[in-house]
Image (cartoon, rainbow, N blue to C red; front, side, top):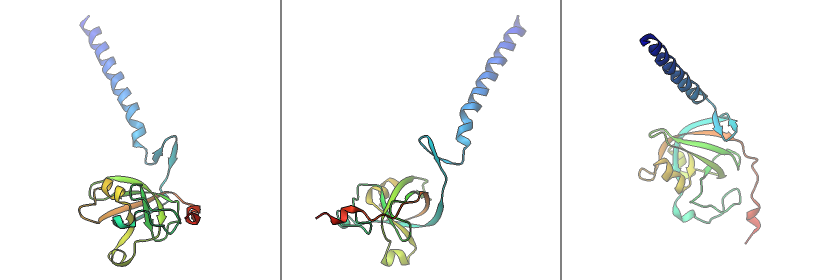
Length: 155
C-alpha cells in the first residue's frame, strides 16, 4: 500500500514537472512576438539617445506631421519615416517601440554621439529624463515607407 502511494506521488510530481517545461518552452524563443505576428530585427545600432525640448511641441517634423511630445515618436538621421524601432536603454533594460517621424539629432548632440532623438514621453519611459542622454540599442522592427505626411498641407 505504501509503495502504491509513492508511485502515485512520483507520477503527480512528474506530471507537474512536465507541465512546467511545456509552459516555459515558448519563452525560449529569440524572436520578438507582436500579437500573432513574429518580427525579426532588421537593423541594429548602438549609440546615445537624447530627447526633444518641450518647445518643439506642435512644430512640423521633417515627415510633415505635427510633433507630439506625448507620443512614442523619434528622429533618426537615416531611417525612413514610418519605421518602427525598439529603443532599449542599456543601463536599465527598459524598452519602448517608437515611430520615426523626423530627422535628427543635430548639432552638439550628434557630434557627441547621439543617434536618435526621442519624444519626452519615450525618454521618461526609458528613464533618461534626469541624465538627459543614455546609451541605447535601436532595433528596427518594421521599415517605414518614407512617406511625407499629408498633414503638411493643412493650415
